[in-house]
Amino acid sequence: MSLYNHVDDKTDVLDAVADVILQGIEIRDVDAMSWQDGLRGLARAFHVAALKYPHSATLVLARRLNAPAAVPVVEAALRVPARVGLVGAAAVHALRAFIAFLIGTLAREVGSAPTCAGANPGVVAGRERDFVKSGLPAVADVAAVAADLAFCDREAEMEFGLELFDGGVRRRVDAAG
Image (cartoon, rainbow, N blue to C red; front, side, top):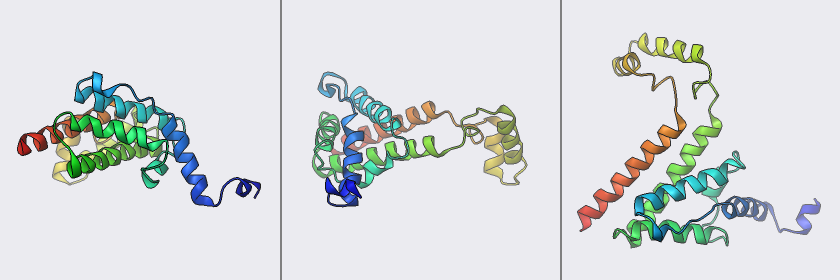
């Protein structure tokens, strides 16, 4: 209870935890890079900082974006799409989608069992067999040619998601331009 001599309530404690995570994000000069490299740099910086407190990282999504440690991160994240013409409401939507992608990727990473990452080849092979025998054509077809359903390469998943995000931003800018 002595903690509450320093903060008003649980909300203040949660905001402080989110601030610690956000302060750990090393923001590079996104203006000195291509916007794609700036986007990837921010994603990786968030990922590194969040993995220091893996089960608290999703907390960042639920906290206020105007927290002192959040504002510089938000600034950098808004400058990246602005460099290609994505501004205003579209930039805010892109920022929120980017945050959701990062939090979702991180939640899957810290919440999945080691077997999902392929640490146990026997388990992965068993999952592949189960998928092939599932009787569900799309599941069986994919499982028969690739281990992607039974095995999760977290780095590849992050890269794939960033490429999708990159392509979505490009399409949005091209459509508006």
